[in-house]
Length: 114
Image (cartoon, rainbow, N blue to C red; front, side, top):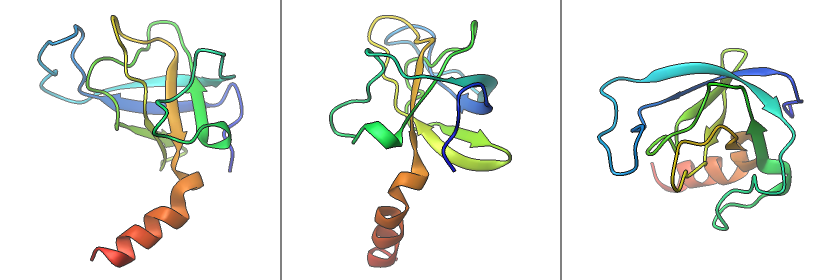
C-alpha cells in the first residue's frame, strides 16, 4: 500500500538536537503528515529512490541527528524507516523509505542469514 499525501504517520527517534550532541535518553515520538517529495527531498545515493521514497512535513516535527533508521508507523504497522541525514540543523522535511519496496530483499537476506 503506497502512502498517499495527507495521511498521518507516527515516527520515533532518539536523535540529538545539535550536530555532535548526545542523543536524547529516550525515544521521542511524533505524528507527521505524508507530503509530496520536493526536488531536494532525495535519500542518499546508496538508497534507490522513486517509488520507495516517502516524504513528510508537519510544522514543529523534525528529524534530527541520529534519527536515521528510526521507524515510520502507519495504522499500527511498520511501514518505513527515516533516511533523512540533517547536515546543519534538524530537518522538517523528513525523507523515509517504504520498506514494502524492499520486502523481497529483506526476506532473502533473512533466509540466508539465520
